[in-house]
Image (tube, protein in one colour):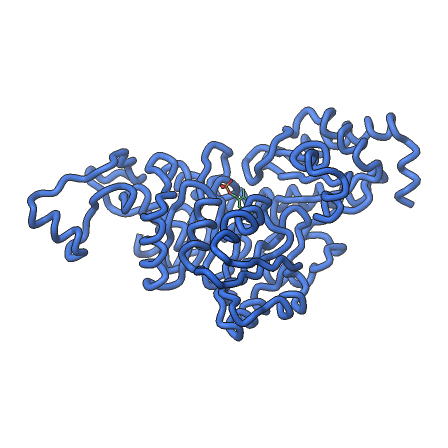
Length: 406
Ligand SMILES: *Cc1c(COP(=O)(O)O)cnc(C)c1O
């Protein structure tokens, strides 16, 4: 779609990546094939030499996957993109493509759990050290830089604290250090935050979340700024093999069409819910980019187009209150993951991070009453009514805890 480059973001979501195909379908067909025929030995040779355009094998290139990749690249304002089998496949491919033995990486402390584990257990085996800092504090980033720092890796808003890092400022630090700035844009999506326009070098996503948006695909993507980086990433992805398949690409591409609409609704509802929670006596604090109480509210205002669908809050009644809320919600569903059309709720202390133990949780900033809510696109009243009745159960069972709030 040649005209879509100039159109508004919401229109790009609908049209980006859609090309011309045999029989004139409006939607890119699913080329569910592992391999493509050569017309002759000369044709096969020219494809392998890169002298003619075409397809060889789906791990290398496939038209359905390419259509989705072109769409995400356009939405992020990037040069090109590479679809991956999961967000972790995208992240590990970027690390392995850019780092060599003896290099150093500075990473956000509030980062998706498996990303930190990947750096600590797999990447560290190749004599690559990581320093984890609060990237919302610029001085912490500056003082973590070493002569061998090759990547600054930032997740913003960070998980699960929703701390927000200033990408423009960090990109200046990266340039001075001769390092590349890689950003995980999963929580905001390009509808709300466009890191490449702020000086970031590479964007990664778990498309499992907002980009696909329907909780039915696990996928990831790498978005780059120039052909040189694209060639490197494509080569490494092809060798590591963490590619996406045509059907999942089709589903993600379909999900993208409503990205702008969905992010508007997620933001609008989450703002109302965040304000409701902040006023609730059973809630100690709420962390949400749309609240004035957010510690980086000023950066949120300049860096985000809207406030997003993720809320973290701390229950005054701690661990016990968290369990009561989890066991009494009826509309919101108890599940990990986020960014889908349905509202999901999670209490790390009693669920994902239970086995870690209280002390280790405290060190990681995961407090006992912390609840993470991924606000879906249902009617906001249904979500609030559900939280309200679950919080009433907390009041009934541990009424004394309310006083701690005052
Ligand atoms: C889910 C998630 C990932 C990992 O993505 P997968 O698709 O599950 O591999 C990475 N970063 C963030 C911020 C996530 O939420």
